[in-house]
Image (cartoon, rainbow, N blue to C red; front, side):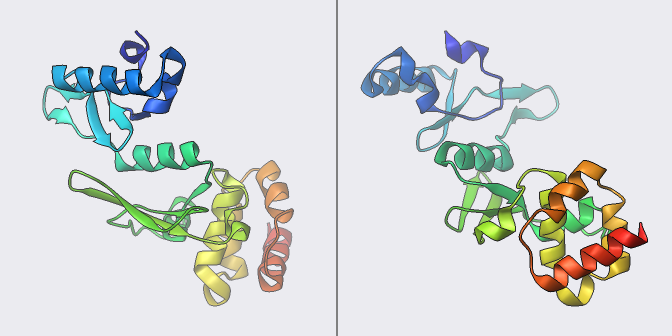
Length: 189
């Protein structure tokens, strides 16, 4: 059966089983698998094959994986929040306690057990290049804002990008102040 081939601990939507029969039949099969303990229901329409660890016992589903699944299923873009983007690009060392993502969908929280992921709706302009290094850089610059996105800071972040990512970033729509800082930092490189 297809469910046995699914990776343990990775959530899936019941829609991936639509090809095996009518939705009512799929729901009954999933309910039987839940009752047998072979599958767990994480949220409405979302299931996971349980994963176990010798040290931890049952390993909970990652809320981040769940957020990515929901975004993909709904055709929404998902991008790391600016605070995490700044950290990944080497400007900050602070880590957020609650994972936050920017999304093209509605703002909401996804909860799994005691873990929470916040999804914040942002404009499509801020989601350009979502999931890429160039998109990460754009998010970081928006987060830093005019006062903190200096040529020195932007130059440091640009050093973490490939030439291809920089070209992609230069093609994005952005405010004039951001374009000017990016141009000055690129020349400094």
